[in-house]
Length: 248
Length: 309
Image 1 (cartoon, one colour):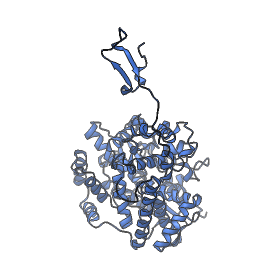
Image 2 (cartoon, rainbow over the protein chains, first blue to last red):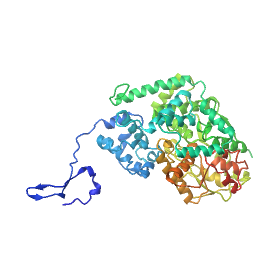
Image 3 (cartoon, rainbow over the protein chains, first blue to last red):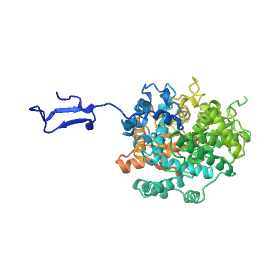
Image 4 (cartoon, chains in turn red, cyan):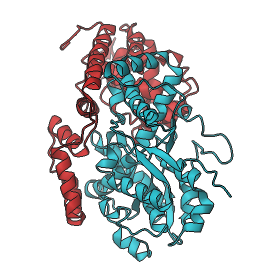
């Protein structure tokens, strides 16, 4: 019998033989179509605990799958594959392989907190998404996302000087991700600004990039934060059973 | 009659964006405050709030960053700090909440404050307010209407509040408390203020939609789509202007308005201005006094055609 709801089945799970004769009966083509078995043998039983051990993942166990998060999600409206409710489900069941199918988009959460606002169980799905993206990177499933590169550049400037300077953040980010600063839309914007901005304001912006403003008496805060960050990183790696330092 | 209004003199936390790309917001906030007889005292030696980024390294550091600013507010003898930037405002509120409800946050803040050698902020001592609360409480609609010199009459405005001003609800315990208080689902403080200045607010459904500000550079394609959504919705509602109250949203809308045109070929004509710029011009300030020349988008000709600035 032909399979009518083929669109609901992933193409790689549909098997069909172009030429097949079984006991003298020709079952070539769609007569031999069948669906691959769906038994799951590769559970990662530690997955929920690992994600719960990372900052933001603490409340994942509270989820009762109502779907309010996905329903409210900003990114889901742009890309229906972005499905926090489903990912929380997979994590809680330990279905790592299935989660990894979406590993390249989980970092795209924009932290709008619509999910957290809608969640009746205080799961804080926004933070769970961040913890999951963090987990994927620590485990080596994905390289550092653009978002992580941006966050790290930004945070290192804050930790170093107590403040950030927009121009420097932008320049460092483009450099770290190997992108050109001469993207057409950026050039269009900047040339527009140069034509219009008063000279004194342009000079002020330029000087700020070379001599960024700093918070005074920051050195002790810097030392305290740096020490704390190192402790957190070590604790996160330990929770995931990884070496204290270095790559996987 | 004695003036009983609150917030006549408050501590002022501008934050990094208002010293850089959002300078127009800084300029217009100060100008409006001066014009309305309100006093702002800038926090001494403040630090970055961590924006949307540091929390992803570790949320407790972000709490500490805001706690340090709150401890400075306390040391300066203030009980209220005003932050015009949604990000700064959100983070101060979040720190206040976490330090009142989460023992681990208190412990980390205690440790870092002690090592850094400054006062440890304890929850409940400082009230954090947004520029909208400040103007609404310290001046109010009636007083604004009385002081308007150059009414925004005929200007159709879509008020855009963004994410960080209302979400998540639990860090804003003073909101959703009935008449007179701010609503987290349908915020109206900016609508109220600009209506008092004569503007015609359009019924805008995307008041608290997200502009993708957190990923404005790291995931520009998504941000461009989100911004385009906001701008086209504002135009469909008949708005001439999107009024903003956050430097990240504001520059995000401006940048991605250009990017949408260059990358997707979708041009939008709606103007983007800080609510403080519109209010300032209504109070009779010139467009340069409220920093229109410092915006990334050019609305000079438009404002002139409307008889403003």
